[in-house]
Image (cartoon, rainbow, N blue to C red; front, side, top):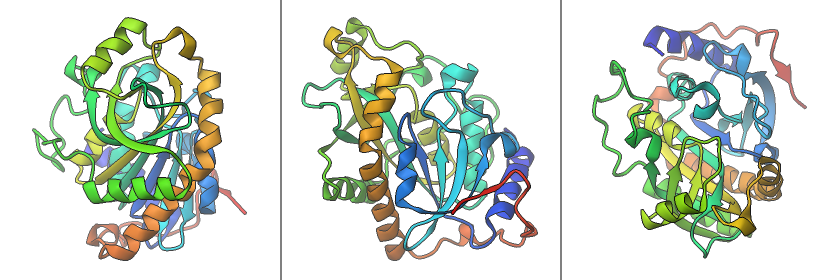
Length: 303
């Protein structure tokens, strides 16, 4: 997605939100849309109504953006995400994240449902991402392929992909909300098939603690765009074991049991961060670029 295309989509979001532009965004994974209940909603817009965004047909991904508030900040809540396996491309993911960045977001909190590879992880546990293995990227499917977007470096360093202070806040907030939490390495595979026993063993041997089919492309694009990132995986099944046979409906159901607590933790992280961080000029620097007119007709006001 080139800069003019992103700018058009960002203008739509800025006009929809009005000032001040939200600096935070949270993206929910499979079955985790109920995390939005921890926030105070203002209004919502479907992904298909934002230029360049795509709807998702995957169960557990409603496919809409909610403009919401925590106690200390305005927030975009992305309920669902585009997946590589849906579109055979990472371009929809890149569009999604770059549009948020262009609309003023500088801090991105990501969630996903994942299979546990480490025997110490059980369904219902949460893993805060300390690092990742990006298998599609290593195999040549990468969201930064092609001409470089001039808003970021050609060769971005990702040794510090996950912001340390933000991740520490997230881990503490999850514990405070009664969840069993650890830090670990997330392996992203392309999907849509779940892992075989041999593949799960391979990923464990490579140092991964959990595996899923999302999140890392968003992290890569967000870091390229200069955003701070933290991410959490909700463990929904045991990967690659007959006793942990994965079915998407069961994954969605398992994730939903944790969603409310996860949302409260995300809200707490945003509030603590917003009160500690000096407001970013980027959130307001383009506030006059877009006339703050009425929300588009496809917008749906929430109570």
